[in-house]
Image (cartoon, rainbow, N blue to C red; front, side, top):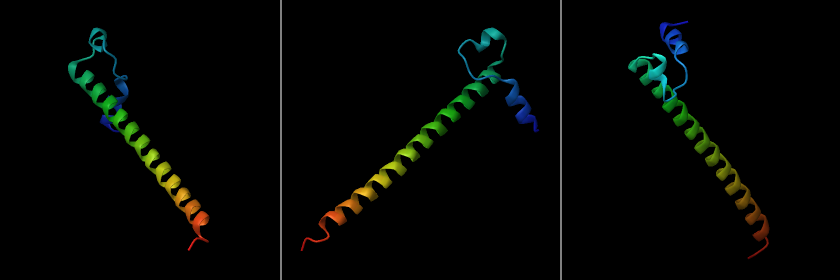
Length: 73
């Protein structure tokens, strides 16, 4: 375990009244940063999942359209 892991483990998830519980500004900033990065990664993962679904749907629609119009000339 690295020193960063140990430090990170000692700081909880950000909450607005952390200063009242004695956390330093640096610890609060660290907690906010960690929360922001987590939320960003969650949004990016959601966007990627949506892109994959859209790609699969488009592929299925294209395939269905080809089957539907294969005899038309």
